[in-house]
Image (cartoon, rainbow, N blue to C red; front, side):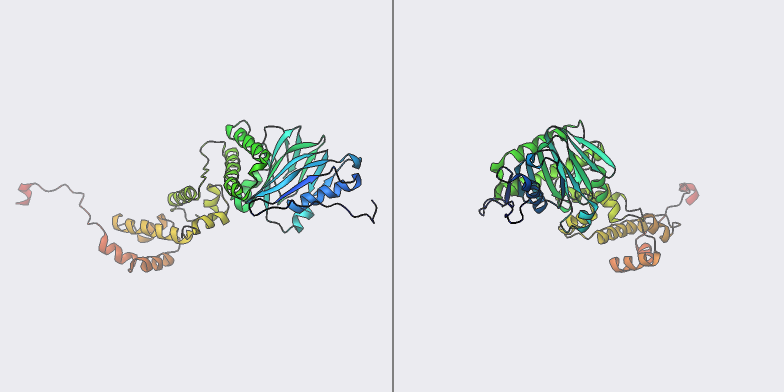
Length: 354
């Protein structure tokens, strides 16, 4: 390459306050030996840092497409000649961008996705994801035409284990939700008239929720896997799970989050938005259960047994919490509210009483 000649770099399209940020990628006006760096800079600057490896015939490198942002969702759509894309361990280690996943929707041909020791062949109609927070490789021997949807981990609100389990596999293969999601994503990427701020706000979040549902369907086999699509529904599922497991002394935020296919961070976030502190909520419900237990249990049942039966392990901590909540000790509560016991002997006859 001539060192004295200025190199072409991708330039974002000017946008108005009503339009979303969009970068158009077109190698037609770029000299052949500059094209690899041109495309790499375009993708690394808008998505995540990448290494692109092209065949030796650099003059044949071609790429056409766009990158646009719709709220928390970023779309990269287009076509390119054969290449290999590497997200190396060094790039993931040195990267400072927010962790995200990519959803790959293939239009024609096939691509190989390699991550976490697994390989997935992406063909038209398939849904394959990979995690930008971990190394991966994409191989397109004959070029690729398709769409890539980037979603931050925080917006997807799934745990790291769930994301890892969904990478480099064919999501929900054969399930109607996979076909629905694939068709919807292709239509969204093709409809560039939607690239306005108003439509971005309307389309971004539902798209993320649809991808989330496809991932959960894959992991749960589509058989009863919880997939609430609203924050209110998610909170209801979370609290119901916690309520059913109050007697488990090991109940934790991690356990609750995993059972509902969300990250611990998102669990605390949705609860905080409704003014709910998880630890306080669990402790209060356990104390309520103990209060009823103290009043209704047989007198021979110890206070410690009642407390342990509702998830408390340390009796001194239980007593302090109970006194703070109800203004008296568990023993005092029991003495004031326990039901009188009835004798197991049958009542005496009138003759015996006289």
